[in-house]
Image (cartoon, rainbow, N blue to C red; front, side, top):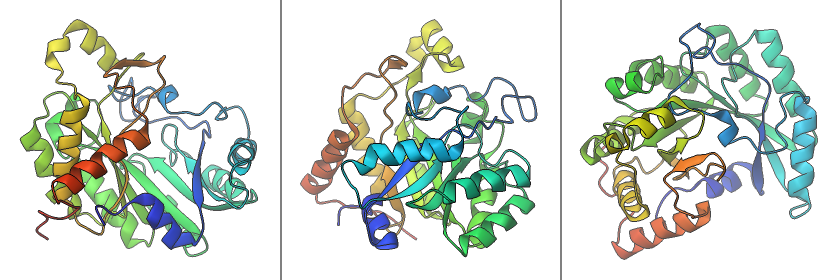
Length: 304
């Protein structure tokens, strides 16, 4: 096996084909409303990853039912995970969170939850509830870690340090809840040496899954303004360079860590740069070919 892929993990976990359906449950973000900061993360425009059926004015159940109809035409036996994706999906009262999560679980075919959130937005009360829920159904909390470098986190206006993210991951795993992490490669000031030092740090965390994404410059973000003013400060990847970084990164990762994604695909109308013109599966095939050609695999250079 070249790497521990997400689709195999889902089949092993559920015994059938499972698809995530994104939900916009009209949450806000403490990094936008002044609780943690203002303006949000420098790279963030949530419109860049919301499918058309994610309408925050619609009930969670309606969004999921539309998503199910879309996928069921091709795979009538498929099951689904409700993916609370937009903004910070543990940012609210426990009663409000419970209503939305349990509404999602009531939709026919939904077999679990994936909850995207910030590592500084997981209070004990919410985590205790999710721990109890995870004994009844599948629950994963997906944290935006983004970088292990605190200087980088300050520059992109994350509003938390890496130690906060590491603590949230450990607490969540200790509560019996699956944990996912999200990392952005190629942030301003990143170098290959810095990026390739990350896997050892990430591998020590009790993560179940990991997403890697290349930096994208998205319209309507502070980073897009920075890029327009000084593009020379950004060393955006071309495809071959990014394939090389991904291969070298996963060689250094814990072999049991499930790799969900390597790239992000923002809508063309929102994307400033880089413009690769590749689908996700096309990039994955390039990674697979490079691993095979170099006789490499996930964990080849891992030292636990």
